[in-house]
Image 1 (cartoon, helix red, strand yellow):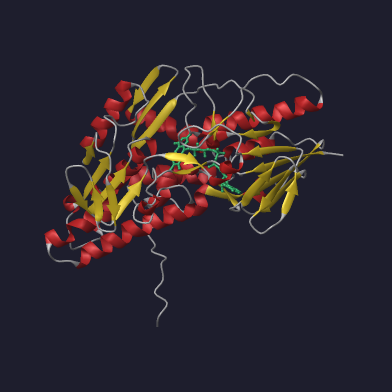
Image 2: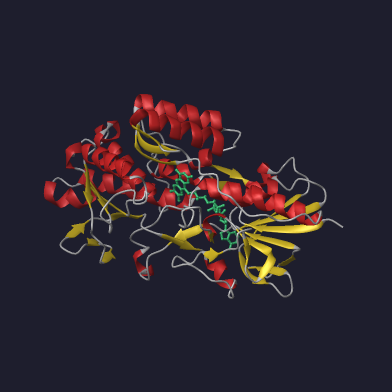
Length: 417
Ligand SMILES: Cc1cc2nc3c(=O)[nH]c(=O)nc-3n(C[C@H](O)[C@H](O)[C@H](O)COP(=O)(O)OP(=O)(O)OC[C@H]3O[C@@H](n4cnc5c(N)ncnc54)[C@H](O)[C@@H]3O)c2cc1C
């Protein structure tokens, strides 16, 4: 009988593991709470109205339409029983497993201030991107209606919290919208009235990147008109705005990009040691300490690299771990040794805006348009693996040439007649 591998999460790690278990020796079940695989690196393009959600998400079923040993289940996994070898879904369904791969990604961490979330959404799903896009567009609509410059200021103020790669991308992208063509469609305020703040608790942007790249990113953001506020932990977020140590920024437009943590399913792995963000500290073969046939991969895993630091929460570790564990399971069947996961670091990069990015590829540091082109090619062509990638690439280039922001629909409806 085929060995049953159950994969929770159809993200980069889960999809890669399933693709690499195509042999008929395996029956593979992927369970995901959403029906699509989401290409998160381009989410901010949806949030800032450059791409449509359909450009960056693909139904998980269609990814496996030609791989007959894969069954896709839509549902949220709520518990794991190691003893009985079953997982339970929110609707009560149970699925038994021989091997279990937990690849549930990460969620935003509000450091114990979960009530901040409603006023400062994070960018993690298509819904988040649409919610943020609508907030930005609605805010511009409000500003357009208010004749008094001071009174409309808050609607033209944007605050991004956290200056990691996502925060930097988001702040740069909003600054670009603010200064470019789209604003010309609003007749009653001037584009120079817009302010974008990027707030960071640490003393630098892109913390963890080589210093020269952090400095270059800070310079670029400043030139783009982003007001970067460093060494400034957020004290409170309300519907009125953001309280920092020394001042209050009044705005309804706050975006959270400050920290990520493990998803709630990881709490089910009670015997496992977790790091401060809630990620599971896994063995060198990606299995958990209490069960050799249960693995945690990608953003959900804490795995230390050669430098002793945990691998970054980016797509490459997730993809490589997916491949590694698939091979390991195949080897198990042949009673071959498991070996250890070794991360092949292909470099770090972050986009800041149109033709602006920083990259460190095996010690070679690039900035500006070269780094940006490289980001585009790597992310759109090599990571995406989607059938529509040529169209997405074309749209991306089109935005570069024209500065046009395409998808500016506000879908929140007024249903009354
Ligand atoms: C805005 C943003 C920008 C980014 N930019 C970059 C970038 O430029 N380059 C880069 O390399 N990386 C980038 N990343 C990070 C990258 O997307 C992640 O590191 C990667 O997606 C991790 O893959 P994963 O498989 O671990 O998890 P994910 O891709 O997050 O997939 C997890 C899956 O698990 C599912 N799931 C979660 N809980 C459950 C449950 N209980 N039951 C069922 N299903 C569940 C989710 O629906 C999801 O489909 C970015 C991330 C974000 C949010």
